[in-house]
Image (cartoon, rainbow, N blue to C red; front, side):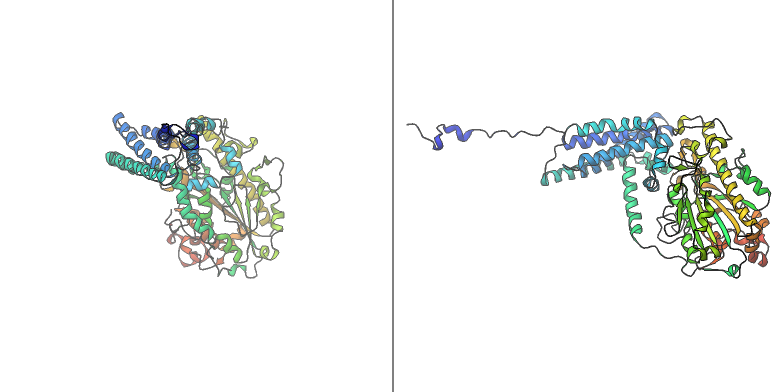
Length: 588
């Protein structure tokens, strides 16, 4: 008898039919994507690191052991990091960002010998469009494509198949564990060689792509963000003008020129074989200009050094960190003086936020400004009118003008001086500095120093004219924010971590000039200053030296850090100048 099935089904084997196959989405398994990308980044993404280890020398076997040990350690760390990112919507964009980080890092490490640490990353984040334009070169897309091309194509040619729920979470955890196990094993097996390598060559830890950028970004977030959202601590709330302002015949007018990327090694007044500072040498011969030959910067980039210059804190006290306190300009303004900041760089880094400020390119200056970039002379254009626009009551007491130079900012050194002011030729005109003959690179840089000499000459002439009119007692202090590397030891530009930085990036020029009227007002002895000119100084002295010069009375002022104080009338009256050496700060 035939068995009749419901719904018209007559075959009993219906219940034994296999379930239809659900089609699966073709794509890359996360395990393959994570390990493949980690291996690529640890190898090709770290070519500058492997080249650096190769250049250190040693036997081939020793170098191979270091590369394998460090390579496996980086692979494990990258596997752990990428495993944390495995999710349908996160993995590919996050992995792509890491690849591009490694690619751009590779370019700049190859091109300029830089390393990526928190201060370098902070400097990059504050780079403006003009600086970015100067860094563009034909080698950049080639280097980026070499590192990023293949992994980006592999990541985006087909989706990465990611399971949902706790299954994928467990697999991610297993991936992180596997990566950490590889890190531990490679560290144990290569400990002796790696420990010695990292101890003797600390810069290598900032060359591990892209972990260097991940670390620097995390460090910046932890160190800086809480300070940026907080209120600045007041400084000099008790600031008031000293006795020199009582019934003064003429107010003081002091210009503070903050140089950019000028290193003492190429400064004529500091003994350089070339006379890159002929104008300043003439002013020095007249007796009113003093060159301080042993000055150390607070940092190796503008983002650190400029705020540190104006900070009440020394470098050892945290002046090189994100500002938590008001600065010198706040104190001068609080005391009742007029303050003006004129910028020809990438901003004042927060220093001028609470005082009147202007940019050199606010109005076009024929022959000095082009394509949004101005030569430093443009800061002098219309300066009389800018001063006249300041508060009259403050101006009558005294004025401090800060000029922030473009100076010798690289890599486009050839753009820092007009064609009619280039005494050293031929010069490098490329931003790919390693491609230039060393002599031409030095020529281009020296031309920028010679133009700074010319700019300071014009500024001193302007100050001398105002002093001759009897309208103000005038003075000038020039100091560079940091130095520069020009290929020494394979390094270019600046920004090397301070503890590792060569002297070319930390030894900077500094000069002062005071009119006879300002000398009489302050009681400064120029002969004494010249005798102290070779004493060790640093950016730590700037804050207190300016307060002393301007006779601003406040508990924030520390006489021991005033570089001019030993040569003041008060100090001279107490004892001979030779018994008052300038105190060397902890940062010097």
